[in-house]
Length: 239
Image (cartoon, rainbow, N blue to C red; front, top):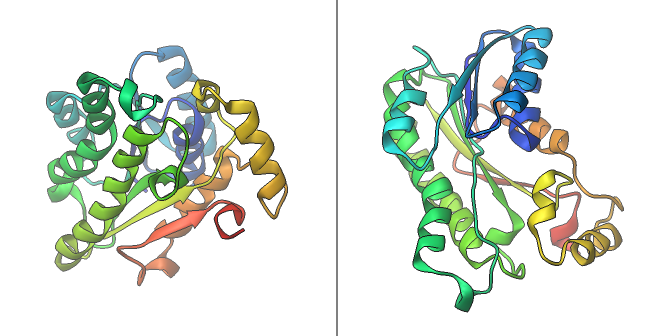
């Protein structure tokens, strides 16, 4: 399986890269600044049985997206994971903050998919990564929530437009996941405590929980699933 995963030097993206490496093929590991982290993921991908391809690229830059799109002749799995966002109340966000957030999630979901479209064979999948903040209130999440909500909406649009090509488009919406990204939330401790109390399974999600959901959508058994947002949150959103 050839896979291109944006933002895959750490956290959820890294977990997806390592999990998909078990299927062989080539795995594009995209990073912005932390080359050492990307190299560590590349070693894990290689150990798991795939060929790692390291690419430093800023997903906000259209030329960098062209660079990413050109790494593989065939893209079986295009995973939109990269996200850079500003966590502030709506009246504290500057226009530059808003643009930064939307340009790192929503725009690449559209543009990188467009750039890769001729490399997506029949049976390929495009998968986005969203979060519960795209559909319910999270303090300071107005810009990120807008970006994730846009990705979920585009999932449905792209699924219909790419269906004639035999390409499926879905998104995994994760609950609170225990990664370094949590450290950027100003009320991290309260959010973690609440999630542990309210989630039926009594724990936070892990990066591998989300990676496994992505893997499920790539299996042949999911060939009739497209245009869907699959929630993987341990039941948090239903209580």
